[in-house]
Length: 173
Image (cartoon, rainbow, N blue to C red; front, side, top):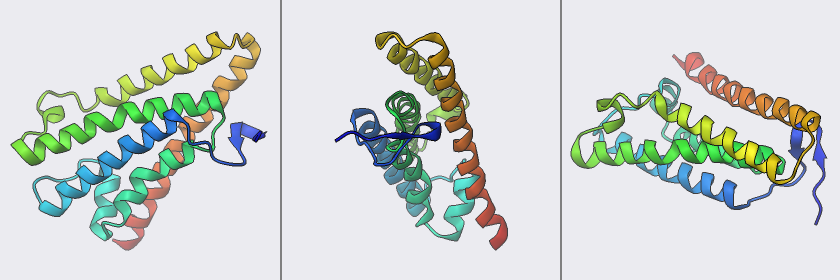
């Protein structure tokens, strides 16, 4: 079945391919480890948005952490690949950090000062995946430029999603 792209690279039906499923699995692991940390009280959430949401209700933890991988399924192939690659690269280190904190009382990403580098590495990986996709399919330069603009739009939408999650805790407090 052919799915047709709409403006800004959005598909009318979701596609759960390997990149999206990998991202969803990685985000699920992050969700479970984050909930474990919060429920056992062995640590605190460093993401202020998620910490505020979790203080309202732990139901927000899976909503917050799984909304992006689920939305990635609606992106076109190149955007989906890049977005899911970046997201899947962020979640495992965060999960391992949570597991390390729970089991050994050492959140190593903080101990080593690597927390700010995880997203940088993930976005570099996403850029490489996006570039490889367009080299493989020999996309013309002007089309690639338009697709890059679309990808940047979706990165900006990630920030809008983040902003949307920061509003409810502020209204409650």
